Image 1 (cartoon, one colour):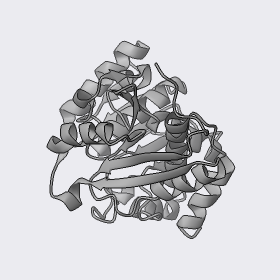
Image 2 (image 1 turned 135 degrees about the vertical axis):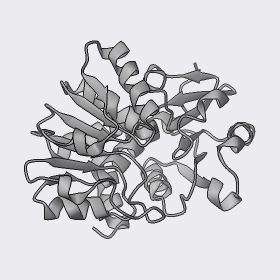
Image 3 (image 1 turned 60 degrees about the horizontal axis):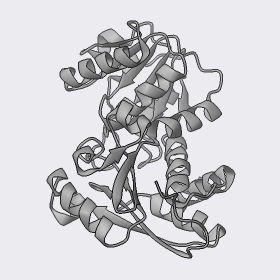
Image 4 (image 1 turned 180 degrees about the horizontal axis):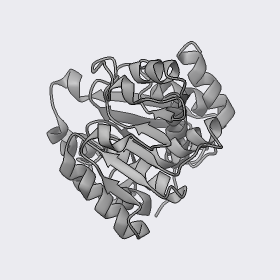
Length: 290
């Protein structure tokens, strides 16, 4: 496989495919970091919602990006699993997780990767390095939830409870984790109220709380002071879940930490260059006014 473009190539085109992505900060993070490396990078938003189409447009969009000379694409909700049939190859990470958030074009081939799990872990461990992982509830078993579930398994969580509005999806993910990691460390529970008692931490990995989907993903009464809460939504930065968790005395991890971690991994894949985590993190906080 041909390595990613190097800094000797002064121009690069990448993009993001997803729905309702106009407020994404990913373009600004990538373009600013590229400039520090002498790259003129343009990051294009490809918004399904604005175009009035759904994931069924993915084959056309991926082929169009390939033909137009894109170096790669980031993939977000609701396309992380739907994009897989459009690709020629998957990394081991993406194959294991059954989800793709980064596509790299190489020698005419579209190769799917996943930086969600590593990006979430990067941000989580820097915020709560001493977090108790002995019983974690993961709310959401879609593309991002699947990646985070794998990350938690690799971090050694002995008891992972998966909750999803689509019970079959949580059950399928639990079975997949069992095949990869052995034992009965991951299990599905359809009722969040039954999953939460005794939990040491909660990871929220659904779109609930976004500007277009406001609200809480679970009853606030289920939050306790001895619980840590990790959010993946960062628009708005202060989601209803984070507000409720802090009011309940929980330690929290905001969605911005995952956004930065994802960007670090995707930037390496797109450019072959090593991004500066402190610089990208500071730029992200500046963008959101923090």
